Image (cartoon, rainbow, N blue to C red; front, top):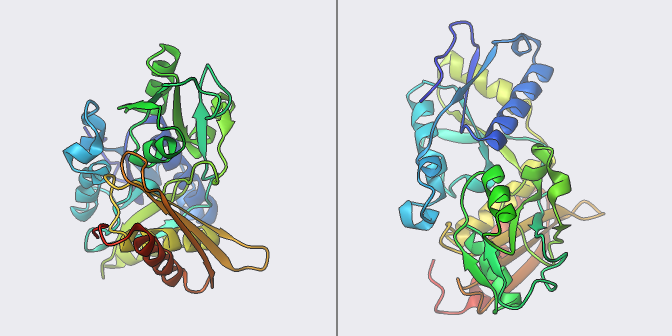
Length: 318
């Protein structure tokens, strides 16, 4: 069910209704108001909550019901039908190829992209007991864990952050992994048992980044909204995300494919991109990295994608 839009709203912002999604929506609203005085008054930016298929179906893996785009399709429909003006997403949930007529116009300053281990029984992955049950809905996390510890048993573990924390407390599993950025945005960062370095667990492409999707149109309204949103873009975060998403596109990645990626600036201003690709069971984990110009992030992403495909060998299908 969607909220009714107010007549005086200058921007109707579409979002999912979880606590984390709403935290991201309010961060976007705050940044718009700080950048544009006309968007600062209460009611100038209205938050419209939209229930997505990905939120409604919790008992199956996303790969079985259509992929991570199920967190977007109802929101994108509202955007294209002009029921909302912008859409706010966790960029790691944004499909590799966007719906025609839309664009990711702004990437907000990226939060810590790392994964967090949460466990009542161990402080590290190595410290978990033999045959430990790991709750996760991420094939990327499962594959990287199984590559290190083939003895682990992974179980489907979906739901919002609060639901996953409750399941952990109830003893459903020995450990789970969550995006540290989400915990920080919910003021739950202290619940992390350990924040995993990229060498331990390469994060999802664009993890920790909030993106704002707009219509690309020729109407004065569309152009005004585009300009408002573009002004809150963080250039460095955008460059990093563009490199990672270009790698993902070359790998034709989806939620069915265990892929990790992280782009970071080096001390001298170059862009370093690390990527990994694995079989679902963690076998044959491939890793690659390259450094390139921050002026050409897509080229760097393509190059790392090609390296991963070459390492994976002829059986890898894109």
